[in-house]
Length: 135
Length: 135
Length: 135
Length: 135
Image 1: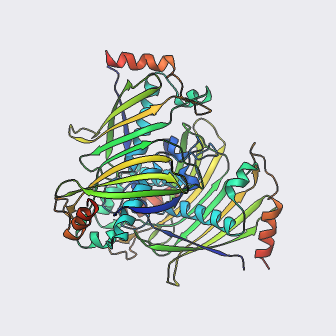
Image 2 (image 1 turned 90 degrees about the vertical axis):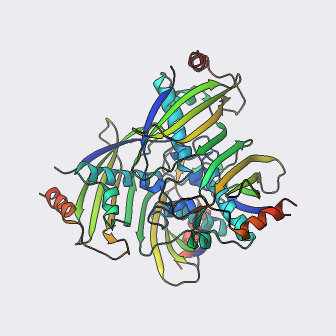
Image 3 (image 1 turned 60 degrees about the vertical axis):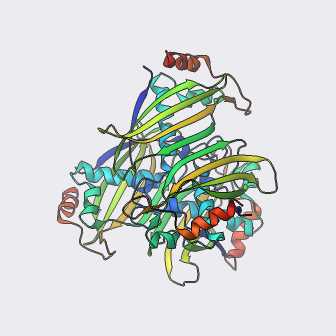
């Protein structure tokens, strides 16, 4: 089972005047969740960039179901799947810690590109993780 | 024709270490574009909230096609359509000013809710704008 | 000894095109450090607001000495002192985890105000913490 | 007279649950104000970086006096002065458009550095602007 749970706490500056976490903050959390998914599998995204592979975002889809508030401890459960030879999609479910109800669901797809911005294959060691995650 | 063009300039702090506008920044731009769409039609979102109608975001879908960079002048062309009695969807196309190529496309749906968070009908004067926009 | 160490990791979206953490990100980290200083002393800032005390920021002073980068683990050592009957100043030193060199130093002062925005005394249980911290 | 006025409008996502502009947002506005100060004098900061000069921030000092709110139109009046051979300080006063009362005051100092991060002289054409601004 290849999903990974990453926990964050809602920052004060991430709230807006509706007194909930602003919808834009989720994008930053999701990015952190993807990087921690990789780390949990033994991959440092920082090193990946040093090795010449960037993974820019192709699309972001977020569905907001229940508000989150300042100081809430938020659990993000992320899995990943191949979405083509040079693409990976990350699926994240967001819940309040200790609560089963889904607060948000997201899919974010990233491309593997070289430093020059040319599409390239997802590195083998990452592709392998994606295959595992589907079995 | 009910679409509205809103222009922003990419802030330095909106870039990331890929030297392009971070994908999260678009969420803030799109919010500004929605508010300016309303303003162009004579609706102040600030006043709407004072009158007791909030419009929280239900979902965000963004497709990134070409990178934007620091200091780029960015044109966002936004239209809106009814998506149910208490929902509005905003469609935005993002381009570099003076260039026809699409850099990103987005759909963001918002709900009309009361201050207590209960779904309510989209106010008549806004619903009317949406009907106009479809003819 | 009343200082508290809070650790964060630099988010990708917090970098800018200089490939370092953008200077604005520190403001959010410092806010998190203040809230965690309070929590470590038994005070929930969330509850404080519910009890009708807000602590808006009066001034921010940050001196940047060494850059921080994506994925860096950053230690913020924070102490607090009374700065008048309705003011508290938080002093934070920022270092890379496991490294003695100072990367940034900051002082942020906050006011105690009522929900109506009127200055009020720093609550006793917090004032007490500040006195302790000076002995 | 070398001060420059740059106007922004407070974004929704820049508010926090106190229903005012979050203190961190000012840092991004001030950066925009510095860049527009330069542009008004004929200097493109984007080009400056392409020519190999970066201007990272050395220190930020902001004093918050009156809150700003969502949708407020905010005027930032910025001037600049030499602060050493490789340093410039920008002084900005923030007001609501059409109102004389000061909402915030800030000083931000930047260094001139090479792409390798070595301190270098402030380029002549910028240094010249600073001298002018003091006469």
